[in-house]
Amino acid sequence: MDKLNQEVREKAQAWLNDNFDKETQKQVQYLLENDEKELIESFYKNLEFGTGGLRGIMGAGTNRMNKYTVGMATLGLANYVKKEFSKIPKIKMAIAYDCRNNSKYFAQVAANILSSLNIKVFLFEDLRPTPELSFAVRTLNCQAGIVITASHNPKEYNGFKAYWCDGGQLIAPHDANVIKEVEKVNIKDIQFEGEPSNVELLGKDFDDKYLYKVQSLSLNPDIIEKQKDLSIVYTPIHGTGVRLVPEILNRIGFKNVNVVEEQAVTDGNFPTVHSPNPEERSALELALKKAKEINAELVLATDPDADRVGIAVKNTKGEFILLNGNQTGALLFHYLLSQWKKNNKLKGKEYIVKTIVTSELLVEMAKKYEVEYYDVLTGFKFIADIIKQNEEDKTFICGGEESYGYLAGDFVRDKDAVMSCALIAEAAAYAKANNRTLYEELIQIYKEYGLYYEDLVSLVKKGKEGNEQIQQIMNDFRENTAQKIANSEIVSIKDYLLSFEKNIATGEKTAIHLPKSNVLQFFLKDGSKISVRPSGTEPKIKFYISVRKDIDGEIEANIQQLKEKIEAIKNDLL
Image (cartoon, rainbow, N blue to C red):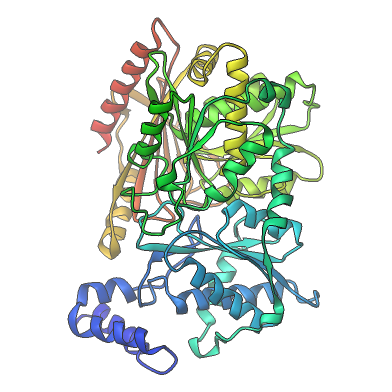
């Protein structure tokens, strides 16, 4: 028996005692006797915090989401919070959860553990969008928060996202310090029996506070009133968005919102889709079908925890097309920036934030409107951190990332699909009032700033072996001495792990002042940008490809040229 198998079996054997319930012991015993491969996957490591916190397949084991890993994460987080806020007599934490299988159960487990430690717990009475948890942490002056969700992952997954007192997800040093505290936890130290007197349920009254703030972001209520019959189709894809998205659209004035009833049923098995991911066309098929039937003008789709939104609009032929995250972000940022300027709200201290893998088009917009911009690492927690750093003397307009997550205003510190749906619908109403569709609005943006086109390739590499393959791919790219990609010269390379940017022509290196991250970026002479990074939440390595050209002639012909360029880049890279 090799060393790994021996270590795994020892870890699994440790779960065969009375610190674990009988059902868990039964599952572990089965793996020990019958399924060595699954045993290794379940125990070869502990679940770790990535860009989105703790996330994994549900089941027994240290590398699985279950009562005990949730318990250890909760106790470790609580112990760290108590140390950091030792002078506060009564620690407060908020907990929310989504529609996934076991989400409510895991949330109750966490609430029981926290309440047993004499921590005041604000627990949502039923499933709620992730951004409302961020709002709760801030509004209720909590020291931390927890969301039980695995976002858009397949049905076998669940997760545990931890939030700090500012309402943002954990960043350094807190993320690493919480992990250290979690590693110190012994199962027998976890008190799974709660203290009900320390738990307060949050319901509709709290929803109203959140929705009131979202409604306050509206910039053109008079135009919505004139365009109140704008035909919108919305799908929550079986998730939490059904709670608040139709409600906020109604509150700001839209009266023709059509919910996809088959997907309005909250169900962690996601019965109508292969994957509840608004990035994928298959997840929007029912919404698109309904939109065609009623001749709708806009399709909105949110993921299970309602922090990301995908949209579909009609092209110049009247056909529905899905926009990618960069395109939706461009529409949203452009609407906000232009309306802030129109309403004389730009005073010289405003700024936007995007992630390094998001389109450079947003930078060009910021320059035009003379608004400061920030580039941050992938993960909305870094956008939240910029807001925190600047909250005393600068004004945040909006932030976004290519993976369909956006935020306006600063009362939430995570991506928010509820407010995004409201503002995207408002942007559509504004475009219609000016005799344009959102797609035509996007074309106008491209004519002004240049045509940017993007694609994302994700290679799935599961398990221990997959993780090793991903690391090897990154090593190979670092050691690659190629001078061109798709016949265009590489002019510079950014290595966020080694913290430098290298000018290829001169060999000069300049420092990158961001936290270290295993990301490589290649900038080409023709304006293309290629980013390579392992996912922090899924067993994938991702290739972000962005290409650009000035529009010459028909938009479709230009797009086709860029699609061909992307294919050439893929052929060179993969």
